[in-house]
Length: 166
Image: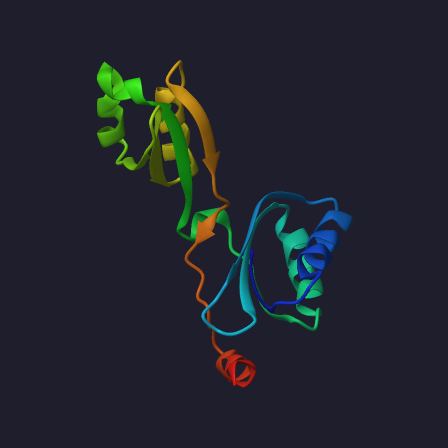
């Protein structure tokens, strides 16, 4: 689910409250500012039936600050995550270092005793890389919420956004 909304204090609380009231589970959530003043893009990965998601989208669109709610099935859009792996510096001395090239993971930072590796991809690709790196050299791991290919401005929204940006 992707939501375009006017930013205000308490907006996320209101949105997540409506979702949790319906006993739906949020797997990931991210909010990011856009290049349009006070407009934010919220991406949520929610588990629910088509009927539950349709009903939820209609309710969310009734919130004054919400301009648009877009619901798509996981299979219908490009869905990626960014994952970060903190590895002990000795990892590069092992035979497993070729795993980074195999999964197109890149070293993004060096520290005295560790290195930070980034991987962008699907859940499956990140999980596979994690499984290969799991062991004594893996110090830490984190990943972002789902990133989708949603349009910032959809049909019929340009006049609303232009008015808010003015």
